[in-house]
Length: 357
Length: 226
Image 1 (cartoon, helix red, strand yellow):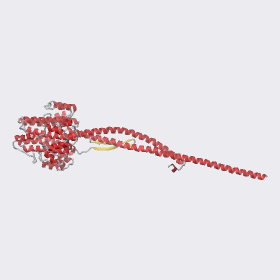
Image 2 (cartoon, rainbow over the protein chains, first blue to last red; image 1 turned 90 degrees about the vertical axis):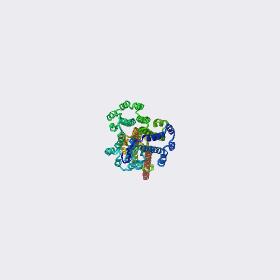
Image 3 (cartoon, rainbow over the protein chains, first blue to last red; image 1 turned 30 degrees about the vertical axis):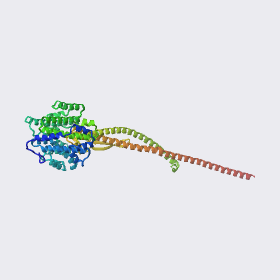
Image 4 (cartoon, each protein chain N blue to C red; image 1 turned 180 degrees about the vertical axis):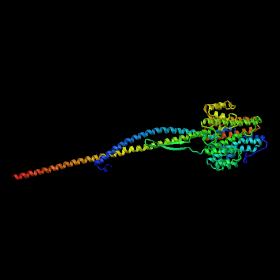
């Protein structure tokens, strides 16, 4: 991808990576751990974490942060460590497939750096918010965070997938003086590159076909979220501008037509291949216009789908993908519990709204 | 002090004029005070509603940001907030309520559409939209509360000032003027009585002198005839 990222022409080492991933997956928190956590206060959660997988990060960051901030930073650093390991272990095509999914963290980091520089934050503050789990190396990210201008960051990204789209969006940024075009360019690049270079569904083996299906579902769900958000906001935005190619749920023209009418959009989803999996969430969305609950359901559906794939083709990219999602979910769950307890949410509320056990 | 006033007719007339003016002013100020109090009661009701809405909106915004920090993470929420540098614009004009100048606050660019909030749509969630929306609403409520509560404060100050003026007229100036008037009237009456007494005395003296003259003339006449 760039001098800052690793390229590989070797053959894939699925057995080795999947074996290690299975071991790590087994060490993730289970339902009992979550049940214990939701009954703890924030300091008890921190103590509990010090006795688990997160011990090292909690100790390393203990001098800089405290309370729930310490928990949140420890969680993301631990996640970054695990995902870095995946990239270190994987070779050949497996590396490419893992890296293309983990570039979401590169996108996150690029956006965080752009936001930091835009708002005048110092390099140290920006670096603390980075999640070093993607392909961009720590040195590259630190160098980018130390840049003094947006243009400097874009220049520093030369050789990466984000450079050209950001340069193209720079004019809009300069006219509007808003980060929206740059952030959209970064996210759009990530999604568009997700399926680039993968074989056709017809010519691919069964595991790759399922991987493609998963990525398509991810893109479809992203398009669906965006269409619903735009429809709900009532803003004069052309939904097709935010449309990402690669999904099967709708094309750009359909999105333009459907985003104006939420009922039609919901009917379209109900009649699609996702209709059955999302039935309950669609009913809730229609009854209460609860978009957040619907997004929650989309996340749950994607997680469940990845999980199913990992059991069907245990020695393939799907097992790694399933682990990535499960690890992310663990981070989200622990953070949700800690933040929920910090803000005084009740036990039922946390269990119902925040944590998907 | 009544004793400091010269008890002259001119002063009495001046004091009477001042009393009349003060009584008229007192009536006008009383009416102004009552009018201001009525306006204040209206604004107080409005301010109580605005304050209650503000508290509800604040609680709602706080709840949403807590949920967003829990679900999307504190870093994501802070990041989305940092993606916008532009501040809302606030301008103040003034309006007049019964002579009291109160501010009228106009705000622009508080409510923003999805593509004006700075953060990208593709990489964020509906939860962030809801937080942004609820804080925009909160900011509007704060601006409204600032306008209404400042007007209330200005009205309250004016009511206090008017009340002090009414009281000063009612309990200090008018009693003092009336006292002065009474003092001058008493003094003038006294002077009048003295004048009458003096005139009577002069008249009596004059009559006595005339009587004496007449008696002396009679005696002289009697002496001449003998």
